[in-house]
Length: 286
Length: 291
Image (cartoon, rainbow over all chains, first blue to last red; front, side, top):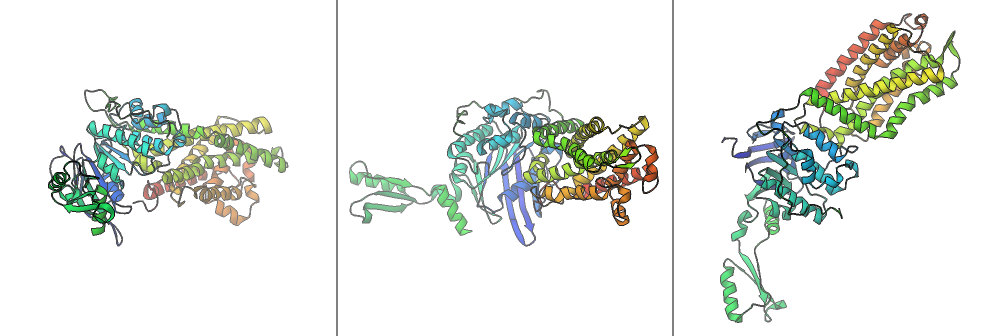
């Protein structure tokens, strides 16, 4: 295996079985340092199981796993200090305030970020004296993120971080994640929101039934960038008044249409398969 | 979330300056420092539930008042039932703040994700348990002080007569709390969820109170009941507190004819050891099925 310095997460042939059920059925992953990597898949596909193996929570059935050069199956305090974990929905810490909780958790790490700076960074400065139980869902999630980053982690795990957010809260949350990524933190994100992947991820893997069915960047997943494009335009002679052609050379077709129309082509649309189209097709094929 | 637009996307990148000096990585906190931090958080969290705190402190005193009023006969010349009952309630209080409160709170914390969150940090595992110990020590001392103070002031129950009797009170309380703490941590794995914890835990101490000489005079219970109670810690804890709080002449009225302090120490130590073994072998940081 290559050195710890350039690869944050390395997984080879990961299996996690529960009796007959194969929650994870042979997964390979490699996440370079500094990358935002998304694990995308439907509920029950094995995303969280995979991540919890990487976080040192779950024992694996088989496979080689390294996170920051260490095997998560034998987690040490020093290794844990280099990770940040934002697990799925939580309900704990209810009687303590945001400030108390963040300061308390900062105390477990060797070189924590300044708690006040972290609280400000996640946008909870006005709520520093609010008890965790009194925070709204989105603000509660920011507290989870604050606790995930207060140790100044090299790798941050975000497990379905925006489930249940309203659209405004999600956009704000994305901004926060982008700022962390810009600061050099490696981020491993699980989600089933495609727009989230498109905005945040440098690379992604699609998981279905415990296996990876595609990897790539959000822009070119499963040949999406070079897939035939659909060109649509208004044509009074076509049924419904709209014509659509699938073509590998949309530019040539548009040039041809423009020449024929002698100017603007009415109602022109050129569409590549969206990430969602591609994702759904992948799940169907698997 | 309507007023939450205080973090525009233009906020400058600020990873939060590390608090540690720049000339090298900081050190992981010691077990002691982390345990003290946990104790502070446990106490803070407990004190925030003000209604529960007041009720827990007042509850034994209310019981003392009720039982003292109902059973106003003397159990021996010059010794009221209230005096006997004070020892039993003090013993129950030790088990309530250790066994019962830990078994319930840890079951709840396992269910709500507190344990899992802590497990994911570099906190030394021992700090969680030592934080609970710190909580038991503070709440146990507070409860014992309130109970003995109220018994003395409101019901004229005498405090231990000399240093020797205070010492008995102290070591019996410490051994009882040690056994109760470890058994409570172990028993927290029994309830299947946080919601069922109270229902699964509370009857344990309640039943023991009836058979261990708290609500009734132990020597007047049926023999088989005495035998069952003698297996468990509460009977010995209550007897040890009677040794500290009642005149030595009453030792003859005990079933064994003496205070049996040596046996008390042995039984409580054995239960402490059993609790320790159970904790080490059965403690779970996560919910059942989360593996």
